[in-house]
Length: 523
Image (cartoon, rainbow, N blue to C red; front, side, top):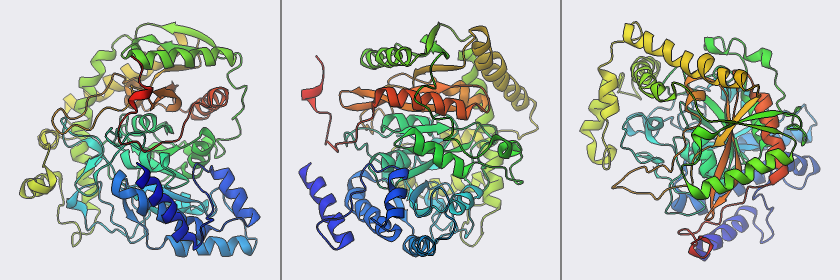
């Protein structure tokens, strides 16, 4: 793998015109802001350096679908504003990458990873992107994802899309990235941007964050607008921040969050505040009762070892741990969620496609996309099909009694009768579990082969927040600790996650190995 590091060094030197380029690897948003303010680097230099890093690494990682051709001009404008001492937002001059199912007004298509949307240059900013720009962020480009946010097939390979290829894990290149925010996870871990934005319906922020050694927050549904984001489910979809630290995730969330008249779910968002960093204290766990979801652990011995070490760290940080062995009705949630996702996929995607330009997006409905995939099967379906699309197309719409019953029962079983009940009956403020096991091999035959996990599904179904924070390595591969709470407890979870992060400093940067280093593997 020496050639990979050589490419990085050459790329950085070329970007700066010198062999002594500014080192942005692993730099936090706060560090970048301090260096920008002190004149040690400019936003334009950051853009050039990140672009050089993408150029060097992307042929191996397949993590960035498009670089924004206007990013450098936006950076120069940020530099001019800083020089003129104009008011600066929390992300002033900071380059970020967004998942390629989120619209931006820059000349880049929003593809959701599909060739059917290859011409979808909308000229529109999603409201979350409007807010990022208002905070001063530079939209550096778009990240790869599991195609259609991994809802096309139940036999897919996470991190693959026809538009972007197969994303690869920077900790071991033959390992999967998880998804669907695969590219955002890889790009954040590899320092291809200061931070990244993903989206989640069920696991799509938290899984790739854990697998790629990042902090990832799936916010309460309604904290961040979903308008102009290619949808799956209005019940469960939400964008979320992905970053190398809890502080950076909190900064990014504060920039993205807020009410949007076009998204009724966000009506309460403005009242939740904007500063999610104010509660980040190393002693935030002191005296706090935390529920340990034993029913969601124990699926992988090495991960369990790291989890027990994480629990010891929580105790040392002042938390009182309460074992929770069961989650009544948890197994019944999946089938109900499936009905909801299939029904809403058809309705919501049809609504989105109808909002696009017919001249650029000939596929106007889910049925059209299915036909497109069939006509372009060699490129679109070389390894797996579209059976979930076909199932969704047969659903009866949002007024279907079976859908309405499933939606109500799933929401109640996951939320009030699920997470809320566990919190109340055990008198705990949050729940913890391993997010899932370490990254699995990329396998075109057996497809995805998760090593357990799934602690976050009830939170996804209920629309409640779910934070994952790095808790250690298993044979050199990251695993994460999940913090789950009730609706609108996002700030509290970030505070707990920050205290755990500061107590453990468990995150390690990727090493871009071709495979797991067997010298580190335990017998």
